[in-house]
Amino acid sequence: MAQMTLSMKKFVDELIKTGNRTTAYKNAYPACKKDTTAQAASSRLLTNVIVLAYYEDRLKEMESKRIATPKEVMEFFTSSMRGHIKDQFDLDPSLQDRLNAGVQLMKRYEVVQKFKFDERKLVIAEKAVQDNDEDIEYVVEETTYEDEEKESNV
Image (cartoon, rainbow, N blue to C red):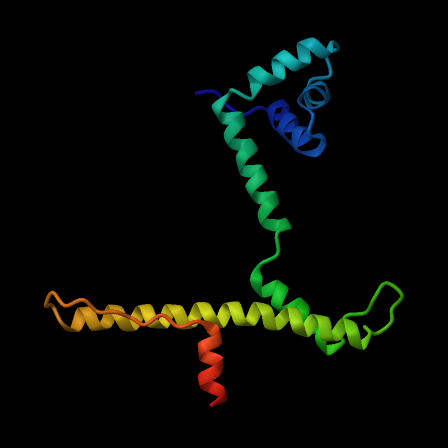
């Protein structure tokens, strides 16, 4: 079985950095001077299963570091709303910025709450089915968020 060489790793890293296969190949393999040769060799190298797997692993690793988790987003909006985050001039956020952060936070909170409510309805329906082994159809009434708000305001 073929091993992953340092040049192959450098090629993948350069490919991720530059986005250009020819340039990445020429940087990883400095002996290659012609663009046409580098282009053909880089295409052939990307058909190698080991190189392709390493490339995909590196992309997944970079993506997981780059994308914020929902918890991070919620924490950021909370910090902004409370005024803990300063702007680029080291000033406190304006009232409008804090209000906007609160609005964005509540939008996300509603989505989380709606998901939890829907999940709870599903668990209740599954429990009812498990309690009765008969062939009874259990219907869970679908309610919208507007219906819930009306019920809570009454």
